[in-house]
Image 1: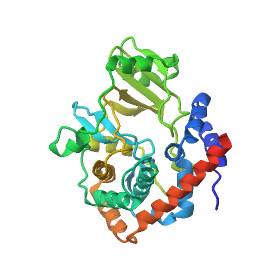
Image 2: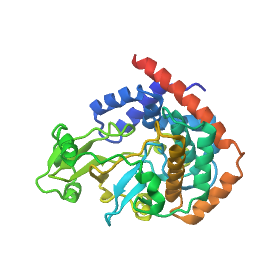
Image 3: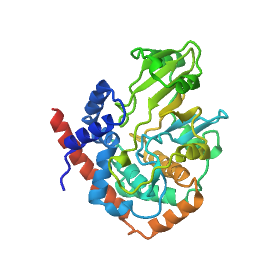
Image 4: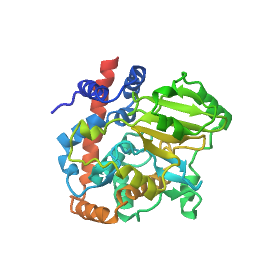
Length: 345
């Protein structure tokens, strides 16, 4: 069946607006970003991705379930400070976390790598690295960037933005009224004399109400969590209200980062950075992709026996399953992007 990305986007946004208040200006920005390039389109259309996977490669949705990131892609990894001040690197967006098949995460990660401009290795090599890294990883805490084995990541982390410039940029957002927040959310921010501002960030979550409290050298962002996209496109995934906290604890996630009364609180700081694989040398791309696969396994392996069962299932799949599915979904995503971009021209 041919996809209709314009109709799918409109249907999803109607569904979303029936469940949370949406910010119309942010949705318009999202629409512009979706028309920018295939990777932005992939990032911002998780609802369409689920529909296309179910249509084109439904076998990816089979097998034992693990804590699945869901909306996983190469720009969903970054640095943070944990509750002990350790700087870590790993999966940094768990908005779509559910119980689901890990093959879906591996496929989306592979497709996003293939769609990234100027990536210096082949799709076949990308898929091999991701499968090998995921299959052999020993799940645990996210990477401590001070560890000797993290030298390849440390070397690629961009230099932190100047703090005054970073916090000044946050203050440029339109003023926001924190009185609309639940009292427990306001109390959790814990910034004296903060100025409050609207904030636009991400791609897929554009449209969700989001604001930031900025102090002298500290900032906290709060945004409405919103419903899981698997509620719009049922794929057999299972929601679990306790899973988010369990995963954050196991991987030593960002601090503070928690959910309160339907809102998500997280710290913003100039040393929260992302490593991009675009234009890296082939060896560096290989090292980063392997680390991404292992970071995904950290999430998948929060309960070890679930990951063990899932790995045994993946071993039974045809040898080229990931490469074949990646080719099919990458081409389909590019086709959907082109149709969407034409609708905006």
